[in-house]
Length: 261
Ligand SMILES: Nc1ncnc2c1ncn2[C@@H]1O[C@H](COP(=O)(O)OP(=O)(O)OP(=O)(O)O)[C@@H](O)[C@H]1O
Ligand SMILES: [Mg+2]
Image (cartoon, rainbow, N blue to C red; front, side, top):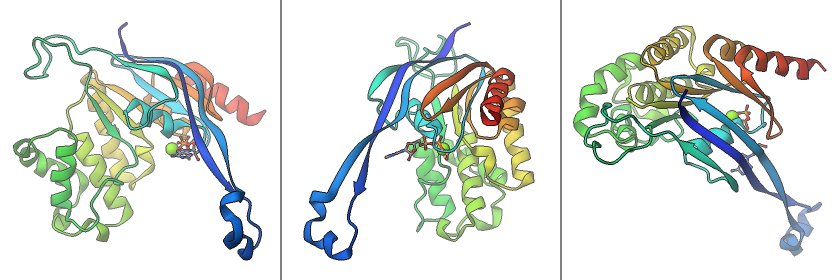
């Protein structure tokens, strides 16, 4: 089986600031002397492989490093050490104009849905900005626009400023945009935690169509049921460390055993 994503010995630390001031006066007198820093390992020596066409789950408690890992895969964060390798697209796939030079598999990131929106612009304007950031041309976006709007269920709100959207509407819009992007790999962070039941149903239908098309999906969740339902294999992270790798069912059993024990 060919690899879509290969992760070797990934380590990521953050610098955590600590302020030791106790009184207001102290904080004015010498706060800079009392500022200390601590290195915090969000990911420690994490390695795994995601196969092509696989639905791969990342599970673990809040703060265990799931989103950090996905951001590294998406190229948003740089790891301190370790290597992420993205597989090469087959020749003769849909990637236009890339006949001669081999290209890595394309990635669509559905991370922190809606965080990239310009709050003072309308949904329509944001669809164009977002689509452009995701690599689409204006013409492609115009063609996709009706489908995105229908999927998000925001027909009446297309020209409303996004800041006046409900948080669920914002996330639906962000998911709808990313779901209309044709990529090889979809990186999804807690996308099913948002939206009401009818929208979750649409999300599941999107996953089903990605499955049919042989797409690779990496799905982050702390909901074991979602991972069990959707994923073939999974990893379980705790405090930035890889605790278990294997079939989704095995990894969930390990996760539940750790929670119980
Ligand atoms: N930019 C940052 N600076 C400092 N610490 C960070 C940063 N990003 C993440 N962290 C820390 O790294 C740890 C892992 O965060 P992460 O967002 O990856 O957790 P998570 O597994 O996605 O949790 P959740 O289930 O709550 O979404 C947390 O302790 C978080 O505070
Ligand atoms: Mg997270």
